Image: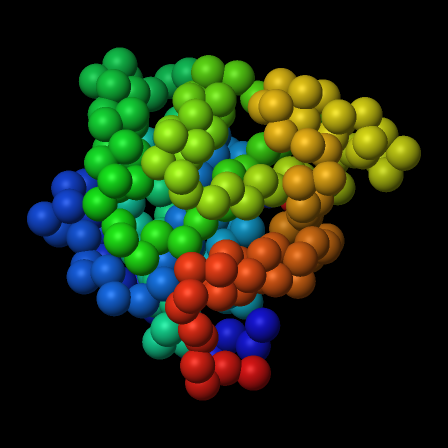
Length: 203
Ligand SMILES: Nc1nc2c(ncn2[C@@H]2O[C@H](COP(=O)(O)OP(=O)(O)O)[C@@H](O)[C@H]2O)c(=O)[nH]1
Ligand SMILES: [Mg+2]
């Protein structure tokens, strides 16, 4: 994908403040520190449009970006960071569910998993909601460079088992090596086309 433009649009917590949903939208979700911002920066070919945080889990905002003037991309709040105050933790579920139920042009949610962690709790909750609301899920395993290639199949199998998703559904990604970038873009384009939406004016 040739990214000609990528801009931050706005942050929001409640639907009243979301930007209008006119473009096909793709959201990104996952545990704090999983590498969500890094994945977005790689996809958008920008060094730091999306903030990679040193204080993970503090931001409980939904961040909207606009790509090539025809795709909306959304960085959803992360979850599962131990040091986040209880009050902030409690907001995550309602904020995510409200978002998922209020975006008519939402085509898919890219759900990130750390190659070294077994998914649990909110990871599984999120997958349940996506199924309940019939929203396409694009599962991506990040930080692939943290394990040797020979260790990948076992790690993928464990994540597949914990989530109930087939092992071959996962795209293996590394922001460090920039590997898997094209695969994720292809899945995003397919998700948009599957909704009968088109991406004009792109290479
Ligand atoms: N080795 C490696 N580190 C990564 C990768 N992706 C993210 N990181 C690092 O993991 C930390 C959290 O990344 P960030 O993108 O901010 O995660 P977020 O909280 O999910 O948005 C940062 O220190 C990143 O540099 C990756 O693919 N490989
Ligand atoms: Mg982030």
